[in-house]
Structures are given as C-alpha cells and as structure tokens.
Length: 129
Image (tube, rainbow, N blue to C red):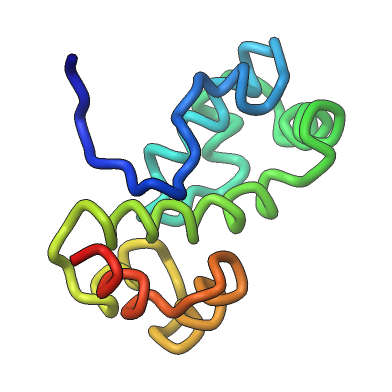
C-alpha cells in the first residue's frame, strides 16, 4: 500500500477531479488543477486563460455550466481545504498557513476555517495529537 499523506478520519477520500466535480471537460479539469497547484499565489483569470489557451470568458462559462460557480469563488472554496491539509501534514504555524493560502490575516483565516469546519485551526491541530 502506497500513500503520500495521512488523512484524518473525518476527511473525505481523494478522488479524481472529474469524479469529484462530475465533469468531463478537459479545459475545466486542467483549470482546476492549475488553480490547486497555485493556491499559494494569486493567479489572475487572464493568466489562467493564457495557460489553457482559451479566453477568460470561456473559463467563466465552463465554471458556470459545470460547477455553477465562478473561478474566483472556486478558488476561495479551495483555500480552507488546502489550509486544513497544511495543518494536518506540516508543522507550519497557523500564521504561516494563513499566508500560504492567501488569507488577508490570521483572524480572517481563523474565521473562515471555523465557518467551514466548525473549529478553529489551532483546535483542529490539537485534536490531531
């Protein structure tokens, strides 16, 4: 058995992007992968479009059609999950994780994390030990 990280008991199993989002569009799958790979940096929509070789408007249409959301909202939803993975898998401080996931402040990060997962980032980390 080979695995690359520890998954907490309450975390969902990882499945492919296509299965996770119920889609079959290659551009959208690649866009989400690029967004996940660049979660630590601000990637503008036109840069994402440039990477994919399609227009910004086409990306917006794909997100609307398949995910019923916008690219910006999608990346905002990715950030707390990425932060949770960093809390579980690294020894980085909560402030470092907040910065790495592009939150404006540690308090903003804590509020968003608590609204998503029902506990503060620090409490979540303490339950893992």
